[in-house]
Length: 244
Image (tube, rainbow, N blue to C red; front, side, top):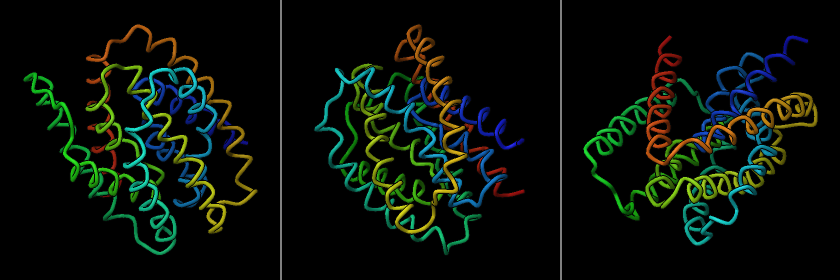
């Protein structure tokens, strides 16, 4: 029954991280789940494990949501993610992890530099949003990790931490519904995976409750540094795991 403790611990930490930064649950879960399941199944279990926690945060901040900011990036993102789900059964993942790691480290350093020097981007060009959505959708379908770039996008266009959390969590909720349906339809996920999902949901809910209490004491600037820092750490992690 050691898998129960692995799922509980991984999901609790994932729920806390996502509750504070708005993303990152997939990154945390994918540190642990590949020891229990194949990569593509791990991605599916990771996504569905967080669904209740995501609903909790999205509902909590629902009054701050601006729907019009979600529609276009989500359509681009989900189309790529659906394609990537099918591709995940055939493609080698080692080189992709290196690319993801390099991308995350570069973006974290770039945005951290911009923030330290008080260079504020008021918006993101359309072509950058399209690239972010395509890359995020691809890595979400492949590894269940679509958060970092979309977090940067919504962080840039948000006017408060509440608006940011409402946007990113609603985005992930829509993503979970669509991508989980595709994973079941394509046979990546089966009913046998639900034992992992249900146990993980318990840990995710506890972690999210703890995070919600913690976030009340953060301002947007502190949260911004947390997000950039976690993106950078995530990139380093993927580089190390791909190269070892």
